[in-house]
Image (cartoon, rainbow, N blue to C red; front, side, top):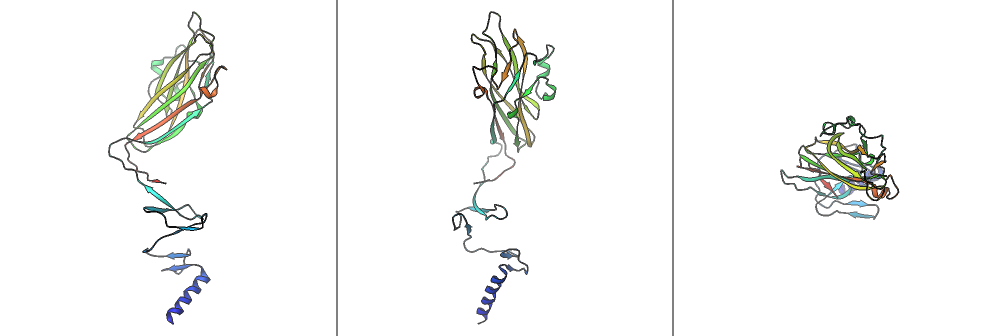
Length: 270
C-alpha cells in the first residue's frame, strides 16, 4: 500500500508541476538532476520532422543546436597528423571581373627606380600608381608558427593598340601580391602590339610567404603601368579595353593555399 501511495503522489506531482528535481527542491527543467547521472540504457532524441526517436549510430555524440532546438547526433572525426610534416590547412579561391585600367598619364614617372622601389616587403602605400584589384583583397587565417602560404594569380592584360608598325609599340607593367599590404611577390612583363589590333595576353603569377604570424592576414593583388613605348593606348588588367574580348575572358582569379605543421587541432563534425 505504501508503494502504491508513493507512486500515486509522484504521478500527482508530475501532473501538477511538470518538473522533477533530483537532489534539488527548485528544478529548472522537466528533469533536473543535481549530481552525477549513471545511464545504463539507451539515450534517444526526438526528431520532430520525422516524428521518431533517434538513438544515433555507434561513436556519435550529441551536439546542441541552441536554445529552443533539440540536440542532434553528429560524428566526431579527429584528423591524424604526423609530427613535423606540412598539411594543407586552408585553401580558397576568389575572382574579379572589374579589374583595373591605366591611361597613358597613369604610369610611373621617368625617375621611378624599379630595382630600388620594387623590393620584398615594400609597403603598398609607398608604391605610387599601383591599383588593387578589388575582389582579390581577401582575409585568410594561419594557425601555426611554421607555415608556407602559396598564392596563384591569373588574369588577362590588354591594350587598345593599333596594328604593329615598323616601330615597336609596347607597354611595361607589373603586378604584385601583397600580404598585410607588404609586397611578397612581383612579376614584370611587356605587352607588345601584334599584327592584329588590341593585343591581349594571359598573365600568370605564383608567390609564396613563409612562417607568417598566427592569426588572420589579408592578401591583395595590385598592378601598375611602368613605361610606354611609342603609344598612348589604354591598358587593362583584369578588364577589357577593346571589344574583341569581354569581362568573362579577362576576369582575374586568385588561389590561396596555406600549408602548416599543425600546432592547433580543430576537430571536424559531420
